[in-house]
Amino acid sequence: MEVDEENNTSPSAEESSIAVPNGQAVAGTVSIPPLPPVQPIVPALIPPAAVPPIAPIPAIAPVVRPLAPLPVRPPVFKPPVQQNGEARTSDSDSEDDDAGQATGGEYEISEESRLVRERQEKARQELLMKRRASALAVPTNDMAVRARLRRLGEPITLFGEREMERRDRLRMIMARLDAEGQLEKLMKAHEEEEAAASAPAETDEEEIEYPFYTEGPKELLDARIEIAKYSIARAAARLQRAKRRRDDPDEDMDAEVDWALKQAGSLILDCSEIGDDRPLSGCSFSYDGKLLATCSLSGVAKLWTMPQLNKFCTLKGHTERATDIAFSPVHDHLATASADRTARLWKTDGSLLRTFEGHLDRLARIGFHPSGKYLGTTSFDKTWRLWDIDTGVELLLQEGHSRSVYGIAFHHDGSLAASCGLDALARVWDLRTGRSVLALEGHVKPVLGASFSPNGYHLATGGEDNTCRIWDLRKKKSLYIIPAHQNLISEVKFEPQEGYYLLTASYDMTAKVWSGRDFKPVKTLQGHEAKVTALDINGDAQHIVTVSHDRTIKLWAIASDRNQDMDLD
Image 1 (cartoon, rainbow, N blue to C red):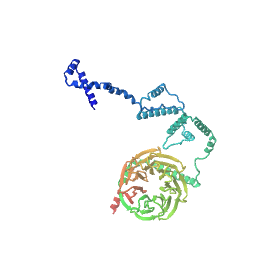
Image 2 (cartoon, rainbow, N blue to C red):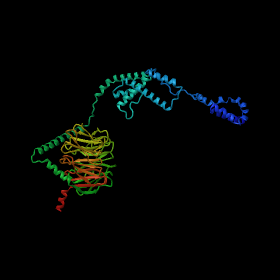
Image 3 (cartoon, one colour):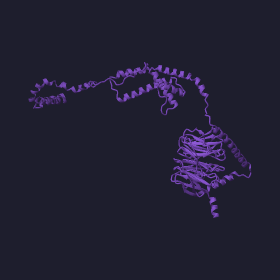
Image 4 (cartoon, helix red, strand yellow):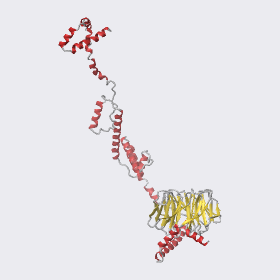
């Protein structure tokens, strides 16, 4: 301890003597009396005076820094491995690699830098792969692309894959196989394609011999002949009447249309009646306008007297819900369609005449041919069928829709039939030849109803896109697009005499009347409290009936007739 204190004091004295100038330092040491006793101790400490060399030790401390590189590890980065003996693309790549190896021992690559380099290397490899793929010959025919994918053991198509995407996938697969050195596999697949292309040349000629159509029964041939005779006479009468009205100077077409629209604009609710315990699905007037028929989801059909709507008869027989009902245009017969896959023919006294069986799924709509001899039915089995009323024979099973067929209508001449379905398509069929003469595309959602105009060249369709389209059969295109309702249109129907106005029923709880001349709105029939499922108009255009899911039947009459009755009373 004493030695330490002495060591501590000695530097202070030296520092004091060094701090002043030489002359003053001597004078200072001589004048201080206490120094003589300390002098004997100082020489004894001189041998350990080797302490002054220790003073610069702190300055040597920076030299110790070379200890830091002791934890040096080899660099994480590795030069890219060349595939299939690929030569480096440029001299700069080799210089970069050499520089990385030279400096690898001096610094440590961070994780972020390593990820960046990996991404760059991956992008470089993808670029090289695309260059290699662009130089390969890939088939342009989609069937050939599928065949090659199958021979390479790859899936021929992926979910949602298009033709160009499939071709690009084949190109990348071929480039990968080429890069991996599997050229033999590619050559073998190419040889198999050539062999398959040259083999079936003889079989194709044999397949062409088979006819595209299937021969129908003799009953269908007889029906086509009869329909042709019937339609020619009706068409001739219609054209003669149109010419007479055009050439007659006393005929004022505009005045007649205005009068008919005025009559339609005066429609009022004349009667409302509860039709069934379940929602109503269909309605139809008899050809003489004395009876009204309705059907419901309970499977029961009912007949009502006009215009008081007194229940006349009940028709029971279906085991599932009834979907539609229609009166014959010439007889006192009516037909019903049901979800039990059958259609039934009834007499007005309630007796069952015939059951039509053959559909594979539930029926949708039903309609009589204008001659009254044939019945058309549509079904969710994607077909519509034509039946002989007298014999009950299925004359025609017509396909053509890709989804369920819902609506059907017959031309007033009897020559054409229109079908519409859930594939958003309406088709016009020539019943005399069996051909599909028109495919009317325009609706963006399922089409639920169709109706021919008595003028012979207009067809109305309505569907779930809330619009009603008017098609001109002469121009084969859509003539008008009516944004008719705020919900889907369940049925459309032209006025049966001259087609002066058009009726539409909708799930927005209303039915509307539209002008047949310019298809402007004329009248809105409001009163139902639920979806309006069907409507009909009688032969003299004096009454309109609508049925709804609110289970009510509403009868609309022209106000002038009602006023005349009140005046007579």
